[in-house]
Image (cartoon, rainbow, N blue to C red; front, side, top):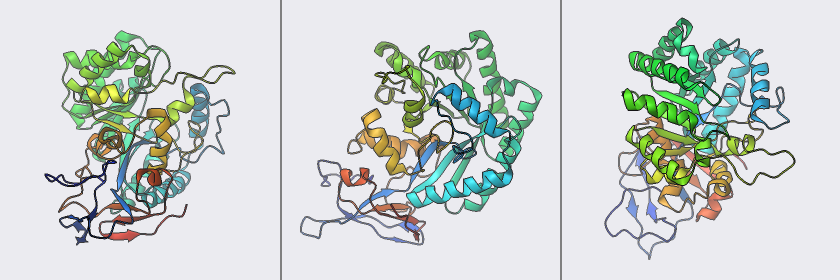
Length: 398
């Protein structure tokens, strides 16, 4: 568990510490360390977690818009087809299902990107804005307007930015090769200026590709080297950066850190879509180089991304399932500080949440209580109870 550190506190080799937690009026009291002579804990406790990158507008649409090829282009084509027939009722029903799962599995916050240009955009925003209001006492839902980068350069984009700012959302975009470097830099400049003017953070889909390593990041960083930006910037995916030479990764990671950019790695969807080779098992997967980014001082979070939609056919908004599935792809071990942080404190920091998940006196009594006594138990999806502001949420079944 993440716990306030005291000098000399006893910790196990796996980083766990035995404590007693109590709370009143929705807040934790001072945790009490348990002595060796006291009964051993029978459960493992984490703070309720946050997922920094999902797509609730298209969740659970695989049945109506499948992508049997498993390719990026196939996903995009199926996504565009499904987008034509979205309704407020459909998005609301799928979103309600997703939020019930998320809360029951132990999530306290989600950042959802929304397809914000085209026939399904208005229905998606109406439904998810309504759900955000109805769930605000149980779960924080952040909304990002996902649009082509050049959309923000035109009047409809400027109007959309005003609406997004009005509801406290973020501006998003897609920066994936191929593109014209000069043109895309101009579009980035417009987006940065617009975001500052309306007061919105930025969260980009960038370098979700298996070619031209870090092509999008290089353009963004070139602009930021010339033009500062006062709003928070998140770069989601950064997959092709993992294909760059190690020295190039280090240099780019240091520049990302210098500009205060957060990174969200999305290993499940990217592991499924990218690096495909005809009739061969892929030996090299484009994936954000999490360790290199962390060494440079970048806040790196891991997100689930897609749930049963054209981009990824699996997923159920379970942070423990995400941690277990990411284990062989990223080799992030939760018993190491930098292995656990991408699932706990880093998402909170990247999302700008008021609580990072540290368990200490005065922190929210928002807990994920697991029938587990070690990390192996955790990774095998144990039974759980969820505490929301000091009140138990109905437990989910396996």
